[in-house]
Image (cartoon, rainbow, N blue to C red):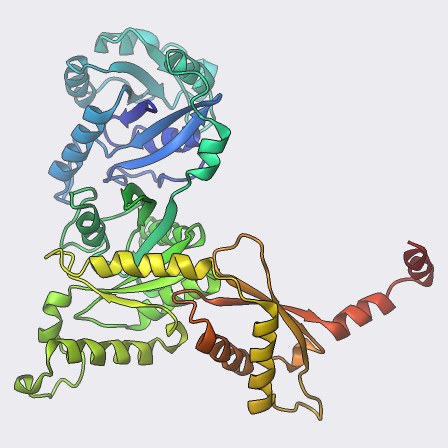
Length: 476
């Protein structure tokens, strides 16, 4: 078992900055404002060939109008209980506060090893810190600067000296990678509730207030032998409503989560349906070339929602299954560019219809691994072009010489098309070809990514080479 290290402390002492420094990744959102981190954020890390799990927590003793104090305290208590070692972080600039003393008394009763980390000591001129912080009663005190890396190696060498040696075996680290799934959507669509329902535990903080989740929270779990890393993200608002710099940072973190995901789950509020914001988020997923699953949450409220004609007689509503089909068709009509994405209807609050989520994810995983035989693929394309030839542009037609699947490890199916001129290739004809391919290979949830090999461009490139270079090239 890997050691678990929890980072705890009062708000705004630099816990998330220390988390990012130790993990060597910009995972936790760092912002000069108390209470930015609310959930537990975990990550598997390595220090000098020794593997460990690092846990970032919210600030203990947060006092604001958010109403999340009890939730943060609960998450911190869980992190402390699960930890083997604890980094108790304090602010070296501000000195010891009443909150530090209260938390220190609490941690002295804990069974774990406690390492007092005095942060924000950015230069040697601040080295008169130690006498003040010794009053907290901990023997192991470490001055660090999470922002600049000062003192980090000394801290980690000390905490890891009793850990099992070489427990970060190369094959284990490479082959045991979980499936990264980014859960995205507008604020208050039920993303955190969905994750809690899938895990059957209160893993992330849930509230009816929009903007409860502020950071991208990685949640690891396993189902039927498949390891998952669900990334709970902050709700993505319209750009015009991003007045607060913190909200802009939160939205940027959510967009980054899309880029690092293997699969993206777009959560839609069943009562609101697919609006402008959902289409923009779907556009980000499509631009990143990521497989997508659409989850319509709050389905228990859908029959009372005015998702269709507001003047319709509520007594004329169709049966539940027919209503579901009508809703799906309406959704695909609004988001026609994501017609390949499966749609799953759930109620996270009632923990209903969750099995469809796992089935759809596995279906997408299988689609990602689908190999398209070159012969069959090109016969499909040939039949499609005969049935519907490309439109002539300036008395010229698009010619497709050959299409092959790129076999490199990618998140979606990538096709390389050898053509006569990329100027003759249009988005409309590409969609037509994709539709023809999907009649034989549905590739559920997976976009088709295209790389165009332009014969005319390659010819121009060869002709632009100096004659001497071409002679040398022919000798080679």
